[in-house]
Image 1 (cartoon, rainbow, N blue to C red):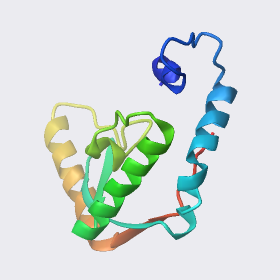
Image 2 (cartoon, rainbow, N blue to C red):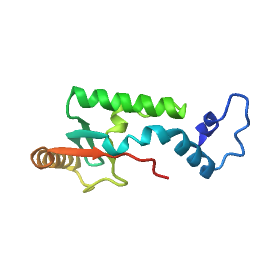
Image 3 (cartoon, rainbow, N blue to C red):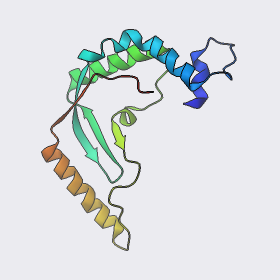
Length: 138
């Protein structure tokens, strides 16, 4: 978030000079201890729902949900930055465009039918998504 770059500095410091390169390097430095555990970080996620613009996953169980919460707290503690993402945002993959855009007078019903078909296919075929070894992408 470009408006939150200044949170990387101590209170009272001017953040106008901050470049994205500096911010990335600073986050990488702060996260070094947390990301060393990434090689054995494993989150089994299951399909939760789909629509024409996104797919949402959920932790496979309460143990997985607790591990994800612990990971998020460790990242927040290491960076000193609060996570502004909601749980839904963290587990949702949004498409850059609407999948199978539907136009016309029966659009609402066709969209509902399409979402049902996408959901049924993903429920049947998806199983568990194995998210592992997270890293800081810059």
